[in-house]
Image 1 (tube, rainbow, N blue to C red):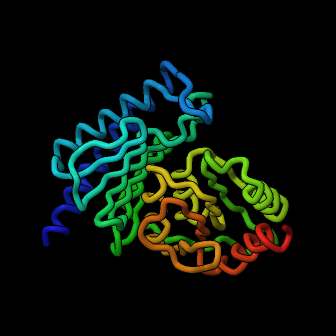
Image 2 (image 1 turned 180 degrees about the vertical axis):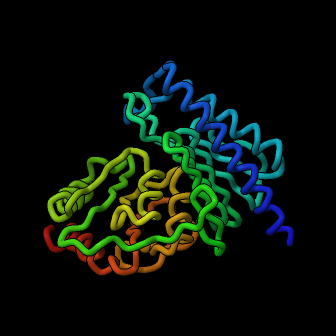
Image 3 (image 1 turned 120 degrees about the horizontal axis):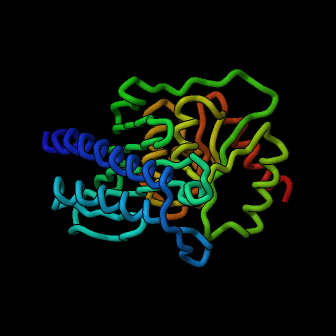
Length: 270
């Protein structure tokens, strides 16, 4: 009962926080803001990231002072707890910085290493996605169910890759194979938007190559609760959390085709 009560409150707080962060990002996208480079991978940090993150953290700390939080810019805060919030206040900062309107907000609640609530706000389309463990997924309050795309000779897939493995030979080989064997391979640099596209059935699947971040588990939960499959490269179901995930996500009818593409790219063509 306590778990259920916490989740009800968490959903309300997370949705309000994501919307506020999205409104902040939308304002700065229109008006402009400061941008600086950060990290060894030439990522960027904007004033919008910081203001949006501050808004989310204030809401979470006020509502759940006994929870742990990890956010994209602020790092760790809060106290040790079975409950962990993961916050990416502006997923797609590089897009934002160059004037491309493809960015969103991700807020995830983890309970004992298991994602139980995922909120994704597609800022520029004003779409609020909510996924709750074993309770389904919604978009702007309407039930979301992954619909299989019409069968095509070539699939449309999304590719998500971690910064640290951008130049790994295996990753490059797999990426090139997927590009050549698919109808189109999307790299949006805003993973949450790709997960929402898959949950709506607008793409056939996603291949994720070692990319864990504060935006990951909201997307995984969204696809799972919409009826999609999440598995490792060998086809085993994925559960919980993994610091180095290699994943395939899709509708069940695309499982064999996508696993074959990954297998061909990693092993057959090596």
